[in-house]
Length: 624
Image 1 (spheres, rainbow, N blue to C red):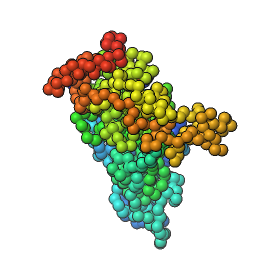
Image 2: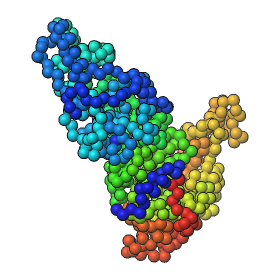
Image 3: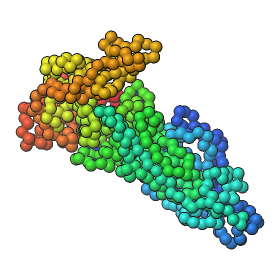
Image 4: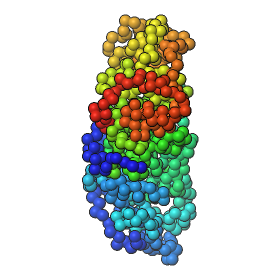
């Protein structure tokens, strides 16, 4: 694909954005400092480095100890190096790509031979530069890495591991080695019986469980379903297993264990990886340290896991779901992995930056404590920006409101396609947005519904409102002028800090403790404020501090003169289109047989005031 943006320019722009073996024990070892504590909320805090009980010398010492005690005989076991414990210093996208794209490798972003003082969702190694990290792995002794990184692999230690289902001699030596190194904890292991001075460990088991997420529909129903495609790691010392959840959310580890394991979600798949809040650090969700199943249901308010869950769902739907003619979002710089930052707090809802070849994130999902549908939609919108960037043409020269309206349309399409039965689509169709969103005081922004107008048969355009809609809201005691997207009637606004709710077809809110019991238009029942009955046979819902009602026949509107254009057609017409007129001409040229002619001109003209047509004044500014 021809690209008119050079790498140097992207790197400069990225700085301005706001919105990666032998069997001898003489293998070189890095100087690990003790107490590699990772500062920061939700971070993994490590303590001292532990003595390694799995080295060949440790196993020889343990075997000789057992022979001297008469537990095993000389010749019962031959100590051989089976694996190597390695790491790779990663400070660029290429190094990370070559190691993480190896489907035979299970990697982690923290060392495996340290105490975990406090578990968390990410790890920062303060002994190296802030923009770099180490990736750790355990590989078979003759493992072949990609030529591009083979000379950069750092061999930390040879290991003696056993991957067979049953080897009681190995089990005895392993236990003795753990005891000699003073890192044995009997409560970690399944010990079934003891006879003749020999400990017989319990049978190996496969760690398994279920990962789900729960959401609340706009009608107030709770829906819990499995979260598919989630990668789970199971770790005990250097024994690493993993599993991926199926459509029901069930998973099984690839490895059997006799001991407790530490479960952890690693938010990554081949096309994408989720990062911790604006950094290059891999995002995890910590699980329990146990020999039981791990069943985890992610809900709103569950720290970073909530934002990760709906972002993961959006990525799975677009990267792995039906293509519907749309291009998949790019996998990052030169086809590697999309890197998406998850952050609970920011003044911006989200931001996008074209991939730049560095290891940092370029899609940002912020303010993650929002309802599932808004969060999912935000993730889709940001993926749409990256997908738009990858289309032929100079993305940085596109009028900014075009980029926003296209992403808004794609967001609406995905929410409609997957969750139409659960959500009131007026939340996403931006009905009459150009008339009532103050953000449009900026002539370069335009979260307008022009692409939705091209698809459906309703006129979402700026000219559709009429007095009938306002009168109908007034008739049920609501207000249209301040309503949600011009489509729902505002019925109740609760005081700041209070919580509105709907119960038995009546509107209530819980007043602030110590404050005025109720507003003048509500009756105090001793605990809550009763604001009256909900209009019959109409859908009402709560959003933030307000209660809205959807009227059955709200604002009859003109049918669209133009409809039926699919998202893949929007996408194709956007190639080399830098403003609305360019997009319109491409659409007409590509699909001229539709005979839209003047009707397409009328539709585009209805949105012509959304942004400036001066491409020099209204180009994409990389701030959203």
